[in-house]
Image 1 (cartoon, rainbow, N blue to C red):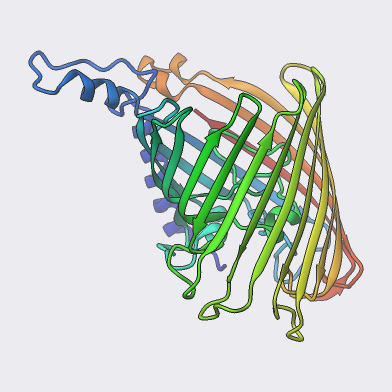
Image 2 (cartoon, helix red, strand yellow):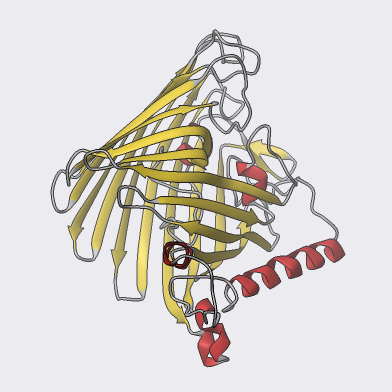
Length: 400
């Protein structure tokens, strides 16, 4: 993941930032924007109403991470997105254009475009690596089939249903800046195929998926992967989600199967305190370094406390076992402990110019203190190796 030249970087990010400003201008349709209608229009009222439901939103994340091990080369071990050491970077610039759906008979879509020096390189799916610094993690059509309460059908490429942590964007980002081992090495990022979701009641919903596999746009082999989810609101303050996936995930190999099972629970303990747990178990036939069956499993706990309306503290503790070394390259058990303070403030760009009102949103200023350990010497320290690493990061998030 070599850096581009400085001149190329400046030109590329200027284009991205210009695109985000254009997306925030009144020329892009959005729910909160008032568009002037032509004096004479032949478009039917239904078409006008549907177009007004199209929204455009954006997200921007910049960061700097320092590793006290001073690794050579300057790469943070077993990290995703924050892998660059001692180098400021624009992690991701995102534009999402979509028409959300919720009612039976509604038709919609979602296109998620991301660019940056971290996220796109990691989440780019097999069969669709457009460029080093650009990716389309989501592009799908949606339709709510008007049967009973409405079966929602998504067709295309969409974010995975696995995990408590997410890739992150304007409609949701993680409490911690750095991602955990389960997110980075245990579960997929995206799927391409078909997803059917149905709300059985106000407290129970389910989903079924048929896909090309994990992080694959094109078929890896002659088989398909099947998955599902059951989400239960167990009380006004707690939820439980069960996820699973099964299928062949090796190129040109229909026989060896991968299975993933996960449970995610959340609990709003107090108005200012929330906690969550993520447990994962997975195995794959003949995937270990010695060609035996590989197993990986993890357990992570999360908590976030809002000291004030603007300031919060988030903590994550996790353990991840890679038995056979199929995920991290070494058979090892990893431990991670992360503390993330965050301060939020409004982004009132409309105070500069009224035309920037669509770009009004929020800034989040975050730090990230993290210590990782392994029962093997797999973390670089200078030109050698050790069993731990400690990193400090600063992160600025803007979303509108």
